Amino acid sequence: MTIYKQKIGSAIVDPEDYRQIVVTFARGDQAIFHNIWLRDNCHCDQCYYTITKQRLLNSASINEDIEAISFDIENDGDSLAIVWDQDNHSSVYDSHWLFLHAYQPKLVPAKLKLVGEETKLAQVHWKVADIKDNLPRVDFNEIIKSSDDTDGEEAIRDWSLKIWKHGFTLIDNVPETPEDTEKLCEKLSYIRPTHYGGFWDFTSDLSKNDTAYTNIDISSHTDGTYWSDTPGLQLFHLLYHDGEGGTTSLVDAFQCAEILKKTDPASYELFTRIKIPAHSAGEEKVCIQPDIPQPIFKLDDEGNLLQVRWNQSDRSTMDQWADPADVPKFYRAIRQWVSIITDPANELFYQLRPGQCLIFDNWRCFHSRTEFTGKRRMCGAYINRDDFVSTLKILNLGRKAVLDSI
Image (tube, rainbow, N blue to C red):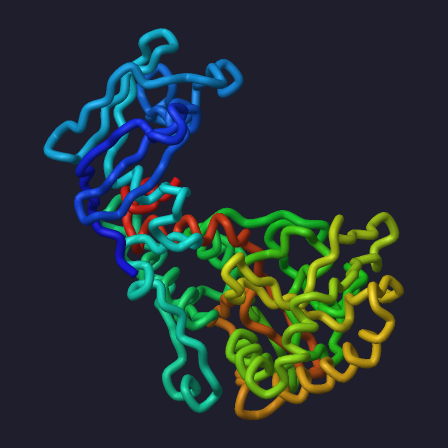
């Protein structure tokens, strides 16, 4: 659904409630707005700081029964001007803004689709056969030489879009140094510091008490299920390895969730409902747990899958069951799920090498690592999802379209 500019055809006081205004748009859609809501959302210089896009008005100062003294349709239906009885304050509302934010009734979906979002930001779910011969990739040198101005951001725009569409990308021609890898991360967004540090540079020496710092096999998982705010992206760069093994795998968990939903809807429903406690407690002074455990499948208000949180290693003891009958159902669902995510049709194995980075969507793609021998040095970082999505939308949809939605 593409949302184009909407003009206002007419506006009247709600005949059933003087505290509301009925706006009819030119194409026939009608919406009712409370006076107090309209007054609270005035974007004049007194009420809204345009530079920072922040409200200045104290909402508690608005009269509960505020009324419109007058209102006029201006600029051939592009705006609605209102004079309020409180302080004779004047407000002007853009017609398109009113249409986007109408709430009684909603005139656009609850999850607003910006102009171009459904086409430009359409995700491509994959199986191994779909992607193994055409892995999404970008070039380090193109990204590094890009600047923050409009003319120089094309490489980062392309990079962010490929991550979003496919859940991961490879970055070629990366110098085999942690310093250059860190610069690469910072080109996309801010590095997220955690108890592992900000930018990591580590070997399998158990300098942190986590299996990532060993050479043992690690099954498919997402990182950070023990944080309320799970990292959005993760980047790896294998700087050195003189042994064998250590192969990485990627799984499109969104694709696998669709398979589970079709083949075993009861298990899918269970994964949207049962909350999973998790922890990180290997470090002596650390025991991190989410304040509210989350289910494996996180859905939006319309039932669309937003995130898959899956990490068997970090799952805590599950002793809080609303219905004990769910216990065997849960373990049955795990068996079904693991059979899907470990199916060779869904698990893509790839050997990382020095000079090539891997970045992936930690809300969507599982990763694993096989056991390895020899010395292995890895560096990388986490990037927060909200920061990444901000970059993605600003660069691919345009700042105006994004601002219209807030």
